[in-house]
Image 1 (spheres, rainbow, N blue to C red):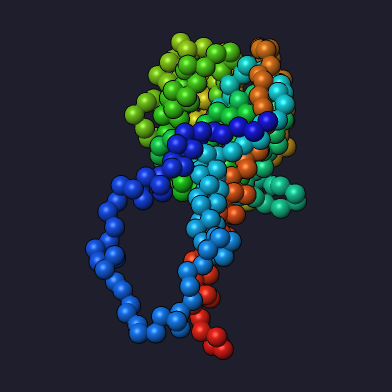
Image 2 (cartoon, one colour):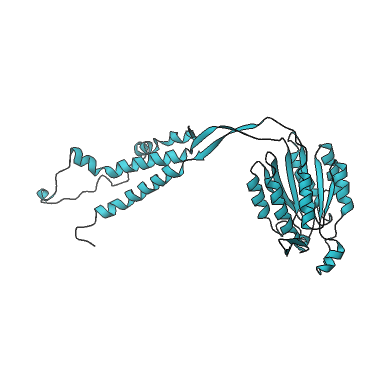
Length: 329
């Protein structure tokens, strides 16, 4: 059925008429006159159908205004009621995008890739399998940012993860505690299972909230945290000729975070291990809730808006064509 999201826009329909009566005419508009001695050389005023035909620009302008109001009211076509599967779980991903995630010690499709590229590729597969969950995305370096709020639109979350890049959030530092704090803030008022999956390759060296304090706060709010330490071992990094400093993984802290909240710590040394970790996380039990009902909505405003634009262009160009002398090129 048809639905107008902004129905109040129709109250603007008589606006041109109100302006016509409320605004004063321009000065001198009624004093201009052309005096000629030969009145017979001019046509007599048109009447009836001829006069009405001469006013067609006004009628077109009124039609254009009607179409413009119709577009402004945001017409939508509502589909039938449908049900969406809802598990009741709110799941937030927190992905480290500090500079150390540039390390190319992972392999994907037979070629060397950076840690962030591997995390994005495997994480995208994990996201699209979570039908029924609300998923959000946090990225963090020296400070955390909410990249995508909790949403059932898994493709949108996956796309936002794919668009994430190093340098988006102060790449020289890693604020693990603040990332947990931001996730807790976004999940605090949610019901059902609340889960944070935190992926990092470093140690906390920035932020105002320590990882231990953040984990204790999460435990009080019954938020479970799964931590993933990513990055090859020292031997494998030597094989890849990677000896950058400042990217050492703090496994003890990640284990403590997971243990304090009833979660679990995972270690991903390569792409295969990271994919296996996400498959294990797929088995998190869900709390079944009643399915949510919704209606599909299809926006119709482009049609009246396009028609109004065409009419406006035609009305503006028509006077120039009418006033052009005969025989003019």
